[in-house]
Length: 140
Image 1 (tube, one colour):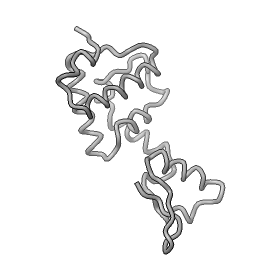
Image 2: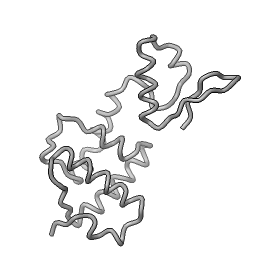
Image 3: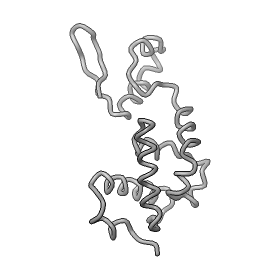
């Protein structure tokens, strides 16, 4: 029996509800209709979240790694789970920038590439600041 995740919400913690909400929004944007959950999907999603945590990637960043080359009409939580390593490898190839602030890397970039690197850092949750001794710094 397929269900909406809200029907099971009372048994889920708030972090898990937030992840389900992100998944619902992502799926609806990509496919155009709400995702219909099966009972196994909840266990698969928890397993997927643990994989993301072990790889130091947020679930949202992982969702962003899904590209149009994937058959979005067959998109499902079990599919994400079974293709996790391939999706993660694809997301690592997409960016030319490290997923952390690296002053030496920043100094090697050409001036026209700096705004893209800063935008990448901002998308990862970093904020630009200033230190008298160090100059510009990026912190999370």
